[in-house]
Length: 412
Image (cartoon, rainbow, N blue to C red; front, side):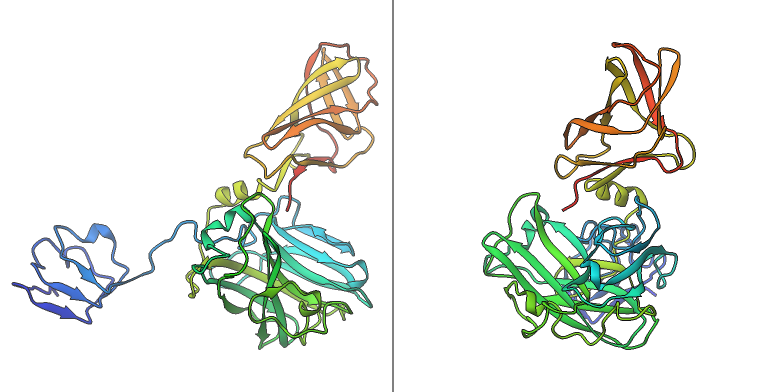
């Protein structure tokens, strides 16, 4: 079907969706105006020739690159591994950018990257209580966003923009849980909260929350934390006693778990899973922005970079230069600029690492920092070598043991 306007007529309420090639072609629309059109799923290649103005058009299903402020919201990147069992302290354990922030007495957990997700997703982050908690102030899942990545929100001005959070969640209980958005602003931390409902146990449910912009406090324009997205799981004290902050106010510990009826960690049957997390400008949740694995990995490596493991075989650590006998320096270049000068993470053990130099193979167990920058690091072997490789010799170091690894962290 073709619609032809000969002259200056007006077509209103036109719905153009999924049209085949040639339906809209040069000359079929002359000088008319299409008003309030719903133009969906029409690729630019389908439209040829000069078209008149389209007023009030609603363009849907079009991609919007870079709209999601959350890194690794689909839980696809897990540089640290896919499972961490039996932990009581808080930390980053599996999926990159996702931290379990908790008191030690709020329970023992296993965290996993699961191949269980709603349609359109592949992975999720799951926490499972393995020993019930008995005390402790806080138990929450965090995702942090760098302050300088929030400048476009115009916080602290009358033009502060609304933002919408959407996510899929699967919980072993029904009831209400509390989400807190913490804004680390230039003159004190701010907070706004929302209670979301779990309607059916052990079932994926999508939740959408819209927050008004914070007109009172501007964010710091630097590489420190700007937002903490906080899904609170449990508290045995210190995080209740105040009303839920449903509008922006000063950060209040007693308001972070005030309205929840679900407590994850009271029982070994408690589980909580999440995926498909998106935070975007506006008051409407749009389709999740799927980034390629390579794009997501590069974003994650700004905060954590796994440089070498033994997985899949020996992995090179770097070129070695012996500054003195038995003490070798290694230069390492990061694939992307890290948030700040990183700290070194590795596991030590007898003969975990090797260096080949001067036609000799030697082993060592520990490292130490010499210096680092956001773009690279220089580390050195801290003794323990046996072959007496002389000063000035060059070589290469690599992992030797299956448990060996080297990583750099600059987490918020």
